[in-house]
Image 1 (cartoon, rainbow, N blue to C red):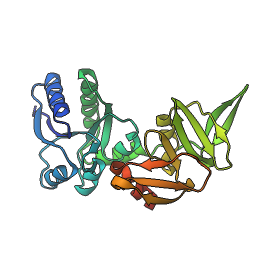
Image 2 (cartoon, rainbow, N blue to C red):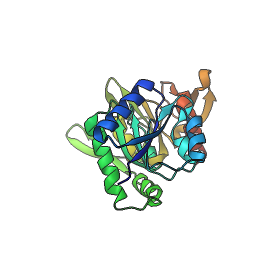
Image 3 (cartoon, one colour):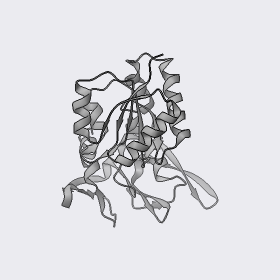
Image 4 (cartoon, one colour):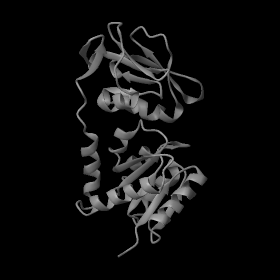
Length: 252
């Protein structure tokens, strides 16, 4: 049986070395084909190389999100994403992602991810991984979420919410008609439930596309969102997510 050939995309040297060591503990025959620390270097490799089986990839890299790699280089092999943030899960499964490991990873989580790869490989031919990722991404968004209001539980239509905000570990939903609700969900859960009409601007805000009137450039290549509803807080999109945000805005 040929050894599993893996490519690693990770900008932190210590983390990359830790992953290599963990993979070798899972299977000493695993072969690391290359380690890349940026979008640009990875794109150059993938454009002229197909001699690998699987990719382990961080998401936030110094020159952008790793999703750009798989768009520019048309990568057809499966990807296991390793990241410190869980807000990108839906995007990951749309980029050949077959698993999503939160850092810090360990022997157990890496082993399970490799087991998942083996299971999928035995049921899908290589060209099907791209279709599989799209299928996993196409999760139907919820039309409504449930709100606890005193003794009652009421449905709140997602399309009526302008912004979800996280403050002091509590999530609030601000509607277009100026009302404030307390949904019993985490912001990460809402990002998955609400679908592509909402964008996770940062760790604190999830914004409805219809609530954005325009976008202003800010210092250090950041973006500031100007809303068409009364909202007292400034919502800023960092430079790493700015490109993906603008592309999301284009796809209205």
